[in-house]
Image 1: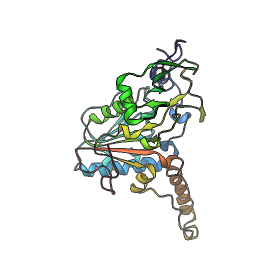
Image 2: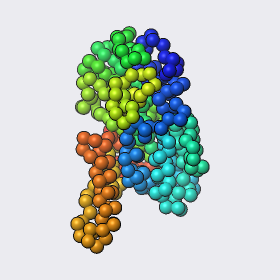
Image 3: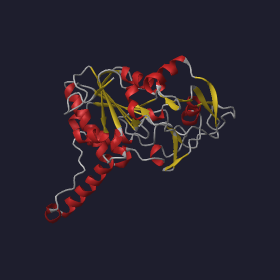
Image 4: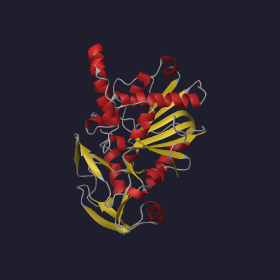
Amino acid sequence: MSAQDAPATPVRWRSAMEAALYGPGGFYVRPGGPGPAGHFRTSVHASGLYAGAVARLLRWVDAELGHPAVLDLVDMGAGRAELLTGVLAALPADVAVRVRPYAVERAEPPAGLDPRIRWTASPPEGTTGLLFANEWLDNVPLDIAEDGRYVLVAPDGTESPGGPVDAADLAWLERWWPGGGRAEIGRARDEAWAAAVAGVERGLAVAVDYAHTRETRPPYGTLTGFRGGREVPPVPDGSCDVTAHVAMDACAGSGSALLTQREALAALGVSGARPPLALASSDPAGYVRALGSAGEAAELMARGGLGDFLWLCRPVGIAAAWPGVGRGPAVG
């Protein structure tokens, strides 16, 4: 089903999202487009401090693994490989030379891609290192239910009631989104994350996204759209991003840690503290640079914004789920 030629017959939201985002002419795979950065601002685009923090996390994983000869770095939903490019630039040369970077993305690779980066439509098997998924799960298509029935949607965004929710989705709702009303069925995301983690032989898998947990499920859901930097109605015709927050605790699995981005970045050495005023006299240029860095860090860690994103960390074959804070708050 093409995003441009989608039939007028309403379909379930999961099918509509798949066509609108990834079908022929879909929002994420359309040739020549600006990529995600042209439509919304992620932590990757907000500041190079983010790539620096991921580079430090990769070095911690490297140490946990005993500094293997080949260190994998897998970026799920890589966009235009901005994060991979930033991480590679932030690594010391002796570490970077051992890194095998993968960009997992359904769109075609951008022009001028770093030749070290392997571009692939699916994650590799046998990963030894770090699998990192920044704002990937929110774009895994999902179904929506209302009062026990699937919600259908037409290409213009008009919704209508569908058939009863099937047994597997009903079981997911009863466990993870009880209470009836409107709900976003995250089972497809749980399965996508489990499949990605299954490809990690040893190391750490991390998913970062705007998310909620069972205690904070939004009563009317979070489905929305983005285009050109603005939030717009979620019309599944390929003209905009269609996204919904992630039920991160449902994805977690046993042994995972769940932290806010604010906690995670602080543990990785990012600080929004202003530089001492005395630096303005002794090193004016350095003071300006430090002030700019503090402002960027503050955006990444802001309450009510990027700082409230959740980091889901799943260790595979290593003892810890998180550097500096033990296993972190366990979930699953």
